[in-house]
Image (cartoon, rainbow, N blue to C red):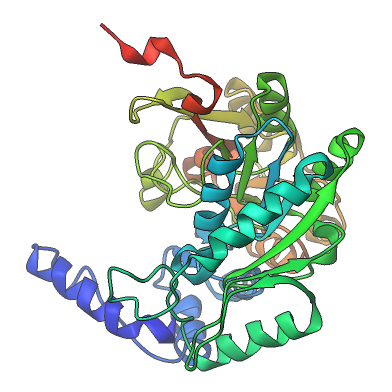
Length: 416
């Protein structure tokens, strides 16, 4: 992003000093709308890794489809409408602490930040009283000061966009404002996550209440957004926790803790659907995307501090098409990995309207029309890959982080 050019220059300088050749790592600063299309359309580019908005990622995909090798990988991480549920069994002090961190740390400028909080109506009055009191204790100011909790947003355009959103909403609570590019931490009332049509990248929390009998409807509403990056739940009912881990379609679940700050090696990070293409950063499938050759998925318990459980799982994708002269062999290969795949006998035109599609494995010389057809689809990005680069995208990855101390701890972690 243009707004971060100075820190990018500083970081690249450190990498060069550490020994990365300056012919291998090159920083090209500039206006994204100018520099981006040039980089993304040069045939010498063999792959692109991008973090930003869903719309920009889709634009990059279309540019790649028109100019690059059809099998060139796109790794896109594109944010989300992240939700958290606090039920009536939650420890309120812990939940408030984690809501404050998830919604307002870094002034809400994290793709993983909490955007929509659901509180069970039985506890809503007492919980919001505690939440608003905790907000009043936040210090908004110079991010260089150790006393500051919430700094400014990144630029004036972001400030104006966020404050305009607040002005259109119903304010439940707001901390005092201060001059400059500061947005006061704010809670807005909404009926549910379906009221959010875009991600507001700032210290704005949208609050909804729900009845216990409507819990399943809340889950359906969260999934219906099409985004799937982070999700949090505060509950001491293990059956409910396992239910949402199974049913909420996101890349990172957080249980009885905040939902920001994924740790490489413990909580591989990245989302599903409109929140990104995968593979997850910090996970075992990520680095193979920067090389040719097959990659294998795995499921494992990841390390973490005592009192925290980190589990990484992969689930085979169900809607994979194989196209081209090697389609039968590609289907057999995919099925050997546990993937549901079938031969695509049509042409590029029928891919645009195919409702359920995760990936196309292609062979032969005529893949460019397939890539262009896929790039013109709305919704989640679907790519065409050859067999030697397809393996990491055949699986849905999920990282689940549980603060087990909230449920009394797990003595197995105490070890011998």
